Length: 122
Image (cartoon, rainbow, N blue to C red; front, side, top):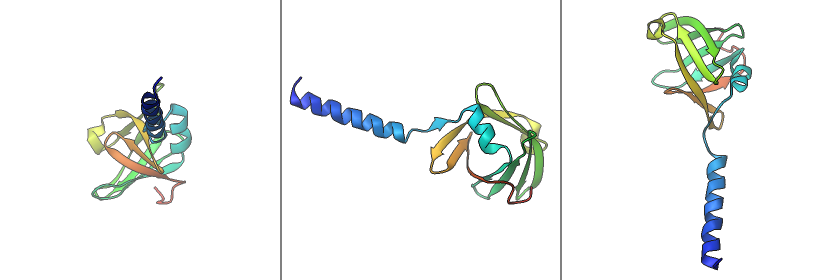
């Protein structure tokens, strides 16, 4: 193999490794359950929304529009599903949770971080 070809292959392999380190990955069902149950999500957007996910599968939210409550579950495929009493007219929505790195996650269009426990008393 020529030296130039070896250099191209080495650079390509290095870029592939760098990309793998920073790749966004979907969380598994077990990781979601361990990370969410008993903790609070802080969702940043036009206004900050806080969601507490209780270990019993209930959830409570506080935002500028007022409080809401509902249920959450995780599918066998690892999708997080949420259903609210008021939000989205009570329709359940399921999507994977993506690890964005640096302690940030994404579910659908919502980017959030996890706060330990229930610091907002929801």
